[in-house]
Image (cartoon, rainbow, N blue to C red):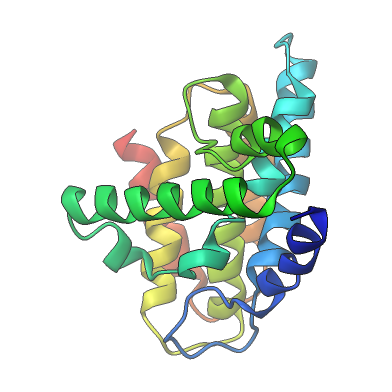
Amino acid sequence: MGMHQYLQSLSNLETIHRAPGYFKYEEHSVAAHSFKVTQIAQILGDIEENAGQTVNWRALYEKALNHDYTERFIGDIKTPVKYATPTLRQMLADVDANLTETFIQNELPAEFQAAYRRRLSEGKDDTLEGRILSVADKVDLLYESFGEIQKGNPESVYTEIYRESLRTIVAFADMVSVQYFFKEILPDLLAENFTNQEELRRITQQITAEK
């Protein structure tokens, strides 16, 4: 038992593809997603800090970098399936928690178990860092879906993913970083050239107006 097993397991995240079962022009791995979410969380954290908020950077980086590590146990389950019912969502969370705890107890040295129990637990909580993670996760998902839409992917699921990602981000509209995203970042995204430009603008206006 040692950290070798953990380090070796990191390669597994490179082989787990996101949005399984759908045609896509560009594959995204869980490993790449974790890196991008951490970068996005860093930007959002900077915005919050510049606005006077106190950011626990250690907590933010740990939450962002590790938030999907446990997908190495059960893979990336399609979002419509994962959220089909509250009962199913809770069952998957329980399986995930049990497999994670087994991994920690059986594979990691005792002196590191508490740290990794913290790092591999659910990071999307009510703390500022947990809220930043929730937003960063959906910003990356929004960009992944936009990339497929921009390339002309005919799968309608990517428009739905864009819509649902935006709805989640809007739910955190009280955050300065989210307000910045809508004012400074999203308009530049929608100004890009792509076939469904008007439809995405309509969806964006509709969702932001609802809030």
